[in-house]
Length: 565
Image 1 (spheres, helix red, strand yellow):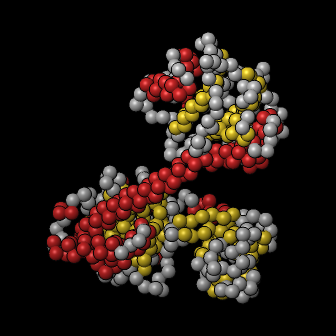
Image 2 (cartoon, helix red, strand yellow):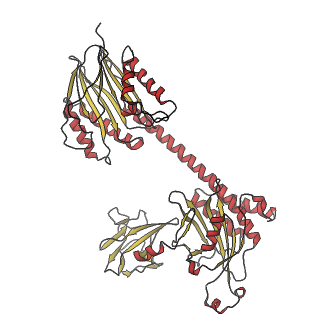
Image 3 (cartoon, one colour):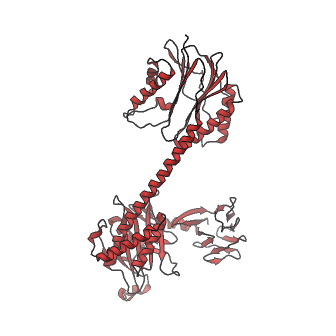
């Protein structure tokens, strides 16, 4: 028999499969299950697999003890499916995998998602769900449709609003609402609030409350009631005869304990069910009334509005924080680019970098390491955004630390490639050009590692690509790849143009690409030098794209040899 532990957290449940012969639980990172809390010992407890059917739990001399079903574990104990293990603030439930797979079919599948069966809240299987709906209300879009006395309605809304205002997060808001409901409905024994999780399309219990401290029975939700509430977006008042063999003898239900249920939907701004409030009572002869249902509908409406407002506010705050962090990241990335372009007699440089997002994965650099030597670099990390920018920052660091001490271009690229490959950036590769200009001889030497071919604009207006006989691979693909360098002597009036695919792959509203031919046409337009040709190329790209959103980072570098005087 295979088995698992289920870590309970705010109504959700994380499955931890028991593998191997032993599993250690504790605070230390070496533990198989790491429980980070100061109240958990470094090596707190251990689960041993004795055979296919038996699993044993042992406390390892922990400071605060290990408990199974609220009983301290002084000696090793055998675990049974359903046992609850308490370690510090953590609650784990032991279950055989066979029972777990079976229980996956006990939830209630709705149009909005699945309400799962969990430790403290479960959905009754159809065979035992005997709920009878006494009354169903209409949608709770309008507070004023109910016949509850206005002063009672107002007092309830004010009380719930006051309790909600003290909540610091959405989970606490659910707790506060239940706390207020127990004051408003003194007949309620137990309550539960389910909220819709948009990420996995499930309803998850966010708050469960019992009036009596000794009532630890799991709160069972009626499948009949829940389906009616969700499908019809209505509140429901239901009576549920307690499961008792006396019913089989046709004894009158009215003489027995009646379990009365109130259930109301929380409707979002778009009319969808974003949550459910469920209250029940098991007091003999004390049932919820129609007025109670109407009042709960009013409260559910107010709670839904408050919840949506809080959620939107939290989203707004998180977006502001994200935008601020991106602004800082953008400033940091900008700081990685050269603050000043080298001023070299007889040469002119143009550089431009535009990220598609706040930060990007393109990179360029111009570094003068000697009076007679200027290095240039251009790179494009696969992907965009923050992950690409982090790789770009590593490339920048590797290039600058390498060219200071390695004079040979091919060797420098080999070292940068080794550094990037060693860092193993989740399979991200970098197309890259690294080169140098020996100023005294106007000699350009460069290595192209899988990047777009540089374009050379000659003084007579001829435009051609500078390409090797065999294409090379990007950085980060193969550690020991041997890169070969190309050389060219820049003649007066010649310009070397380097660019990333954000230029040629710029897209207009008709989903057409700017392409290499349009780039060549823009380059061939009359211009005095790099300072004029660069903006001219960028303007051609912008005019082509129009109002279409920029999809990729766009970088352009032009190196020009001044024309002979």
